[in-house]
Amino acid sequence: MSRKTQVPKRRPIVVVRRPRGTPLTAAQREVVHRCRALPQLLDPLEAELTVSSAVADVRPDEEFWAGLIDHAVSLPSRRNHALLRVLAAVLTGRPREWAANAVTPAGPPLAVGGAWICDRSLDAGYLALICEYRFGRDEHAMVFLIDELTGGMIRTAFVTRDVDTARRRLAEQGVLNPIGAEAAHWLLAKSYDRLDRGAVAEVDVEVRRTRLLAGRRIALAFG
View 1 (cartoon, rainbow, N blue to C red):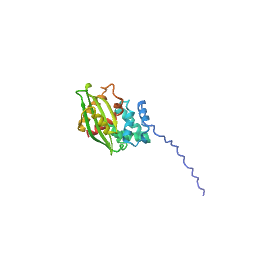
View 2: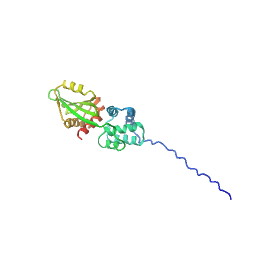
View 3: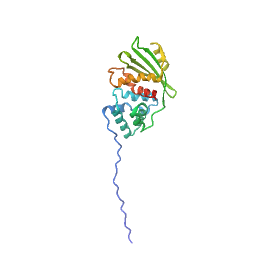
View 4: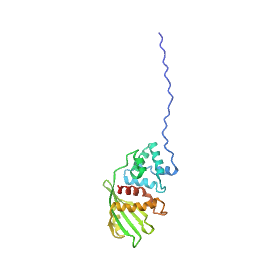
């Protein structure tokens, strides 16, 4: 009785290709390139500044963020994962939700602290605000200059870790009074709304560089 020789079936070779991700515009590709150091950054404030600085000359809208987030989700990498985590923390509105649906937002949580105002609107035509924030025990502040002579436009904004020195130097410009966090950020929301609508042609470069940070902190102050 003969035994039939079984010929093994040949299966087609399946080539598994790495997903290419959603095509990016030139501006989006540049932003991704500027964020290449994110996986190495352990400081949450530095990570925020990196992403915010990366879009300083872009003025991103929802369509911009949607494309960037979709690309990062569809093309996994350490850089894209780090970028998504920072976006999930620093963005607001629907773009923040899109990023947060994909990853856990970068920590630690951000908390709003005290705020002070130096009102020089009558004699010098400006308001100066300093607002405190904390990542855990690490404090920092943002200092803002609002031009009252041009309808409350934001003119200067910068971040500092030396909160005491910033308050002392601001107090040298005039009387520094405490102001509620909501009231302070309401003033900032009005000023940045004008900026986002294109009402301000020329502003200090730090205003654009810190725009995402300011937006996150305004949203947080309003709960």
